[in-house]
Image (cartoon, rainbow, N blue to C red; front, side):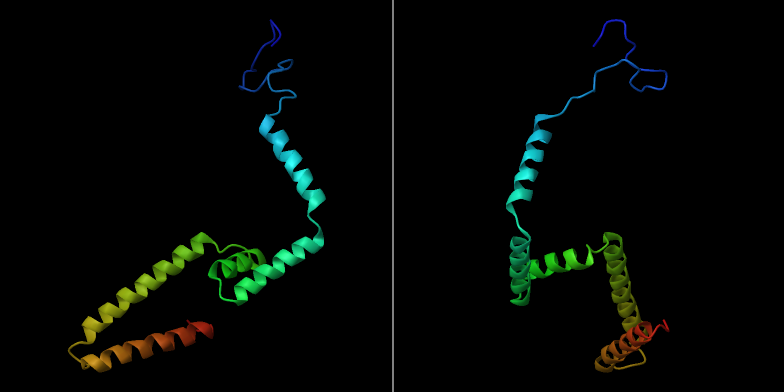
Amino acid sequence: MTEGVKQRDERGRFAVGNTAAIGRSTPRASNVWALRETFDRSVTPEDIEEVVQALIDQAKAGDIRAVGTLLDRCLGKADSTAERIDRLIRDAIKQTGSALNRALENYIPEGERERFIDDLFKELDKEQANGLG
């Protein structure tokens, strides 16, 4: 750095004349750029089509990872917040089912109780699917 040049201004930014970060590049960034250029020159649209078709074939054959990758690429990755909310809802339903089971144990025989609760949740699912819930 040039002698006598102020390094930072009063807000902590590089001051005028400070050459500390000008024109510097990391060697890794240069390597990555060169690799990307090679990739762009080497991979054709037909190559991409073949790879995508192979992924589709794997997914159709039942490869769960291929299914996940394909759906992530086509629909976008599932929002982790939505997944957490879905898990919380499922846990709450399980707890509700257990609480219902305990609450109904004096009124409905054991074998019928589980069937009653299952039917109740099926009805709730139908209402939710129809936009009523």
